[in-house]
Length: 216
Image 1 (cartoon, rainbow, N blue to C red):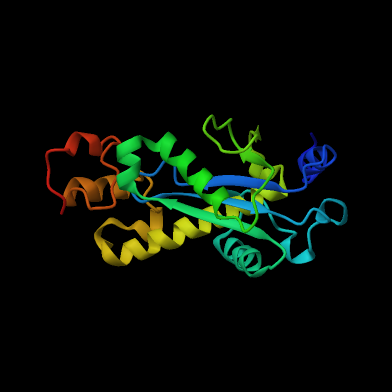
Image 2 (tube, rainbow, N blue to C red):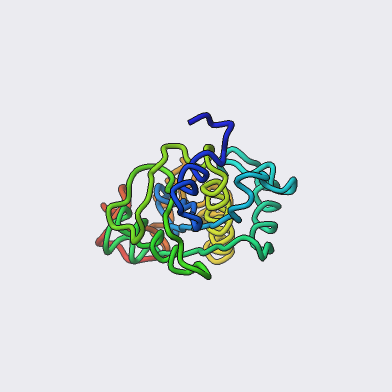
């Protein structure tokens, strides 16, 4: 499937009679702190032939866009009455309880459940999701190959980044606004100095070696 045809997957399934296709993506599987966030987006099926509006022409894998562009796209997607969307946040406590993979699957299902109308099929970024409540196709690097998944990627990342900026105000010593909870050298140094805080994932190394220590 040529990556230049970013409605190709949608049209393929639409031809089979599936008109409610949800793009699904997540943000935050790898960090040492904070939640995992998933989003589901159903774009209008008439866009499959007409293309996305000019204001959404920059839709892409969220990691390939600047923060400014991501924020602009987020506002457009969230304010559009033509776009159905759902966002789910699973916190670090659940991640530690069920593991990050299962927490991610839960977030995806919850995001799909928050759509205004149920989707018939899902296009998921990455690998198949055994526990997804919908039949689906898994697309490696799908956020750069499908506008539906790309839109979900934007919602998930911006939502999570905003949450981490909020946590930075509560726990400024860790620098969450800068690294968003990922295991940068600055973050690891802060953990070594300050210990863990309540949003750290204690099941993740090196935090898993600190189980006997109290939260700061």
